Image (tube, rainbow, N blue to C red; front, side):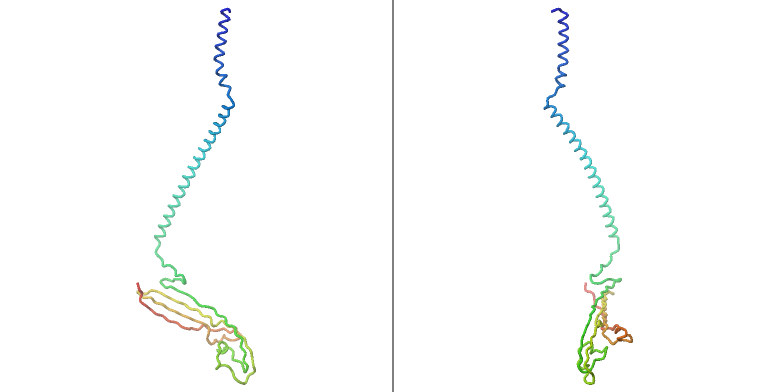
Length: 210
């Protein structure tokens, strides 16, 4: 083989040897392509996890700041409440006015009666129309009669007071009802109005026991 041909062949072989590795690396197998795809997917998931971590840390910091502000406001409120003057608690069954405990009570009583008198009629607004009083039953001189009465005049109301004065418990009690003789307004023409009547009232003082 002529020398010139041998030189050309050597150069061609050298060029082929240099180009072959690149060609070999450029061609990848299906396994390598699958691994590269999985690697790209893992990198994407890693980036998403990093973003979630950064967001969670931000939310945690924000929550801590809000909790700190709430604690500061709670402490401020507690300090203001502690600075308020002490006030006596309200009783469960009444209310207070200054140092006096006031309790109100009573009941409303409706009485409906149907009476039959065989020999005369008991006068209107008399006690014989409210209670059974044999001495008030008329005898002789009148026809039989039947009457119906409706009244709430036996209703009662009371006022109970209690206060501390100079180391003593001073208590007062007032009780009233309407079971009394009617006034000028008490007649059947004016719905049998009755006046307020005092049943009992008292006041007493006792030493406080500490």
